[in-house]
Length: 571
Image (cartoon, rainbow, N blue to C red; front, side, top):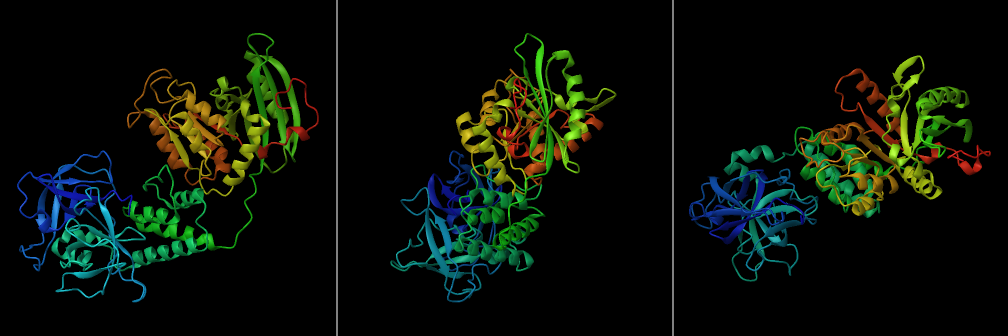
């Protein structure tokens, strides 16, 4: 409830008149008596849970035919806002949702109003006395506890919402009127829909959808009782595994409880597939109660590591080391100082030789360890063989890593992160876009959280506007980093405001949709498929995709290997 941005404060002539709630981006519902007598142009709406969002002018476009007396029916007014509000509208609960599962266990209801002295709003807790409609129009409310906030002027028009889900079951229309009496009345949503038929499509009926919602609420409460709500990263992973392609991203700050995650699914996910998302999320929550299973084994890769660095023997010469890893052992294949013009041919020859050492039946992986200044090298575009111009990255899964990440301390951190990622159902992208990315120190904090997995960049590593962010990401260390060598199109030294006109944003949008259901350990295979598509299709978004993927468990511990060449950067 506290974070629901759809709560509205209704003002007439600059004075607080009552409350209301957003049901579409341009529509607010309130009581007719709240706006009765308001002069033309004097009606305005403020969304106090949207700090900095300006007050919006409004006008009455429909009402329930209220006659002007407290006992008259139809005390409903529909306000049209002068401009849309960038907030999710209130989610309406299924009919009869306010009833508790048993008569002696009513559901707690929460009301957010603006009585005198509380211009920014205050909460009151209530429950329904009985399901009986008074005069076919109202349901009586009574205070949840004797010392609670009474309904008073300023609560009229406020949404009455379920405390556990935030879904709206009705609207406050009146207080009891007598001092010391903490009762009131609400107009349930089905009665509101009778007075304004356009609301009918927003009120769920008692069908399988309401059953799914009720089942979800039961499972969440059980998970909380059994102590299964203690992993912030898991809450995000549950949502990411359930959400459809058009559903909103999880909040950057994650969910502070499993209840908050369920509320997000019930209130923020809409559209034709919302019921499917609720059902999937419910199934994932239910899986928390299954018997624990052992963590999935690390992917069975048999890698070939190509290490390139400046030799120190003069300009234009490169130290090249090629090794194969199989059966937990490193097999040196070749190490030499090579003229820059001959590096590709040397790598082709040694990669071919390295295949003789790979474990039969395992999946090959080509990994390039590069200095930071070479991390954007298009090694995936190198020819795969002297007589075959097919790009190396279109024949084998190919990744890069930064040589600085091969230090023992960083390998330990990465191994711990990958152990956690083994159970991740998909790769969640932390986007670093043009146009004012977050400060590098805050980025480091985010990437060191338990739910961090993949950092996606809208510009290349050389771009001055995000170079410090890239350095921070690589050293955090983020297990996976993805970018396009083409960058955002503005050039490495030009400013870019980001947004819909930025090619880097378009790249991240495509990447986000692609990796959300791919386990992190399978990303090299996914990128191989994308590179094959891009090689066959002009203008493909993944044509210059670069994947920094680094799972230390794939490589044997260098300290357990036989002595390597004294010049080897791997030994």
